[in-house]
Length: 141
Ligand SMILES: [Zn+2]
Image (cartoon, rainbow, N blue to C red; front, side):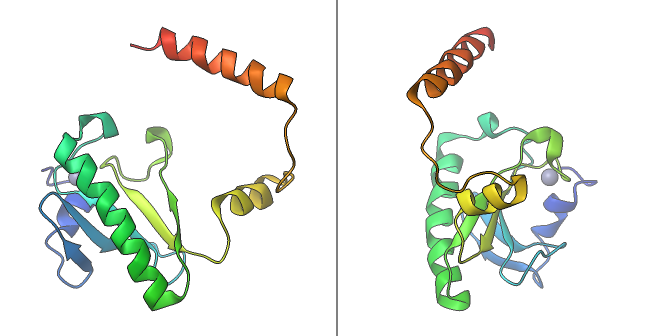
């Protein structure tokens, strides 16, 4: 735990914490994009997802599923589930955003980036992308 971490401090904020599990908790986002915007995060102050223990990672995905069902009950929509890369996180403490929406992630990104919503990509382009990513994956320890 880091005293300076706003998300670590939220664990004790009974006004905003919606659920506390063994390793994971749900907090209503301070900077709400809309009602139902919550964060799921580990109790421990990890700054990278590969630091999570197997038990923590398993519980995070279980809580995503359960919270998604809860958001559907409360707001009528399942959520978009999103994770920012480290460089784009406002807080270093790893967290997952859940945002109730009648759109899927594809529609959100396509609209924001002004891209086709559902156009099939040529196989050759997909293969070039695959080769580039596979090569880069091998270069990372
Ligand atoms: Zn923290």
